[in-house]
Image 1: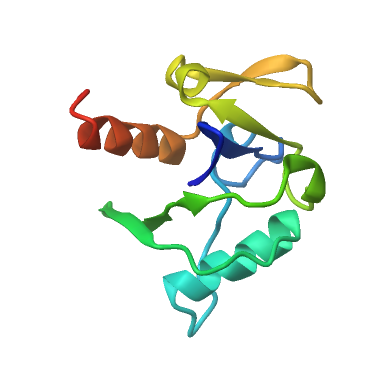
Image 2: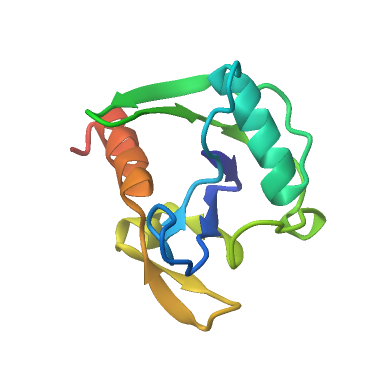
Length: 134
């Protein structure tokens, strides 16, 4: 989760059948390549998806499910949104937590609201748990 001025950087996933949670808002990231650590994968994915050479980001939490393990990292997004190049997905925004908590986020490029991917919902639940809201 990358934060800037109280907002989270989100990626609107492509509307491609067969990908995980198509057409929903998610955090940037992806799968580990063979031999990669979660930290290495995150830095590679951020370079591939938004052309950002991110600094190392601290691990926030790990969520284990029967079919996968998700590592969530959290840190500050230092460049302006306009300095990033969206290379994967159909939109990206800096969304305030209030909007994210509503369950849908506005896409300027698509001119519509889209739902949250389960992974983003999980990150919101973790933040609420930390803040004693859930």
